Length: 268
Image (tube, rainbow, N blue to C red; front, side):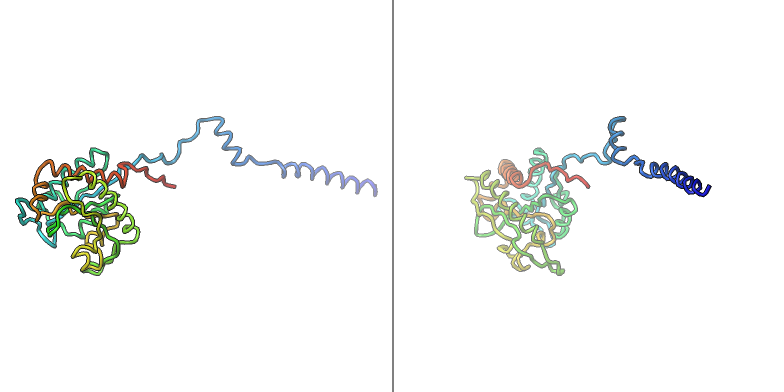
């Protein structure tokens, strides 16, 4: 009995331990197995977010004046800057929308007064791919020029801008818009090239940037379409044909800078 008792205890322990060991080592179904079986059985679940459709590029058109700086309504050679800016803006809107762009205007009528700061804020809120500021010059020159901010300026309220990214993109946009104008207006108007905000009186007074550029968070260019003090330039921009040619040339330049449809980034 003394020998049997220890043997019996050993056998009892072995019998108890073996099932426990088997149960301990039995694998549980993993998440990986679960995914495979789901894919093999039922149809896969739909993704939580459908890929977003392409987004139309937004272009903000800013027909210059009236503003807090000037009304732009004085008559020069039979027309006014406010009228010419609005007439071309309306045709430019049509040209851009026909090409697939989304257009935002900074004012809803020719005579509406909008401050230059507010014009920039409208483009910012629209997250525009480009802001086009349309103006007509009055100087001893003739022809057109495209301006962009190449440095930060400071507005009267102390605001400094634009930032380096806006400066770089505005430079690219100015070159593209100028290329469209140079080609489309060849033989009709004098080409004065690409210039900077610092080369304007107001831009220089503000340290290097126009007010519309200082407050802009999107690429911005200012187009002096013609010199109204020149009779030939004024005659060109007064006609429907001249206005349409100007608008189409600007639209050609926009197309060189940004496509009408941009694929939206997928959210992660």
